[in-house]
Every structure is written in C-alpha cells, then in structure tokens.
Image (tube, rainbow, N blue to C red):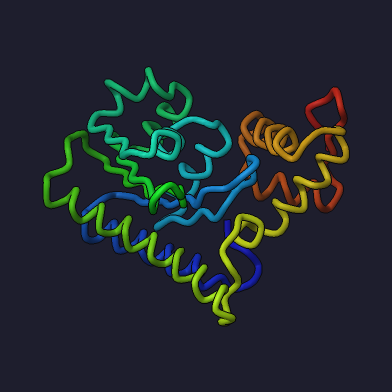
Length: 228
C-alpha cells in the first residue's frame, strides 16, 4: 500500500524494515500501525512479498501480528509448520507458500498505548538467538520513537500532523469504508469486514478493492457480497 502523496513516517518505517532484514537478519519484514474501529492503519514492508503477507493478516483477522497486538506481547514462532497451522490455518498456509518457515512479531507499545507490530520472516525454521532478539526489540523501540516523534511534532505546531489511522491509511481505503458503510447501511467496522471478505474471496489486495469501490466499479448491497 503506497499513498499517493509522500509520507515521511511511512518512508522511515519502510527503511526500518529494510534495516531489520539486513541486521537481525531476516528474509522479510513488515510493520503495521494499530488502527481503531477496524480501520486499516499504516502498513509498510521491506519487500512486496512481506507487504502482501502483512496485509493478509488484516484481511483474514488472524496471524502473529493480530495476536501480538491483542496480547501485547511478542509472538515467536520458530517452526511455522508445527505451530502455525493450528493457530492460523489460513494465514500459515499463505506464509508457507511464500517460502517462509518462521515468523516473529514484536508489539510496538508505550505504556497502555498499542501502536502497532513489527513482523520478521525467515525462510528456515529455528529460534532467534539472544543477540537477534535484542536487535529486534531495539528496532521495535526505534519504530515507537518514530511514531511518537510524529505525534510530538504535531502537537507542538510542527510540520507533521498528529499520527492517526485516517491520515496514515491510503485515502482510497478510508473513502471506500465510508461508501460501503452507506451502501450496506452498517457501521465502519462492518464495512471494513465486507471489504476484507471480498479481498480474500477474490484474492485481491485491499487497496485494489478499495479503488474499485471509489471509482464505482464495485458496490456492496445489504445482502450481497459485492458486484462489479
């Protein structure tokens, strides 16, 4: 997902994912920023495959990112084949198909505030060493500082606006949620659920489905899944 206009915070977090791949090390890395009311927040990754797997957790509502955010603790799966199929049957299959065999999720949080999750993917099963874990935690802390700095500059009258989900998400996705909410006569959460379901059923990216809604190529009726 790449917004049409420049997003300094997104660029910084995307670079951080690249640094994670190089220095932890990992075969892939993605980062999701927490959102409210089922809205999609900022999502960045080091590469297109990691980005798709990060987005898929939003679509499915399952995966280590979801568990780490909900449980507010790291989710470390050293062997996806043994553990993943029981915890996240659909998502684990997609990760396995992409060639990854281990995944590690680190929540981005400060106090009671849950800001997001950093996910690291590996092609070989195995636990992270102590040094690797410390590096991953340090990167998660750096991501938190990037997000908090955005908030602080916004509150002090700087160039940045306070970080929130609406400004972080691609504008088409936020707009599509509102349109679908009206179409189905439901809530924003229900609208997002319908968009997610269509994305999964058609094996399409959320942003592509959202763009079809915004351009009126796709609409959702109260009792239907959506038609083009």
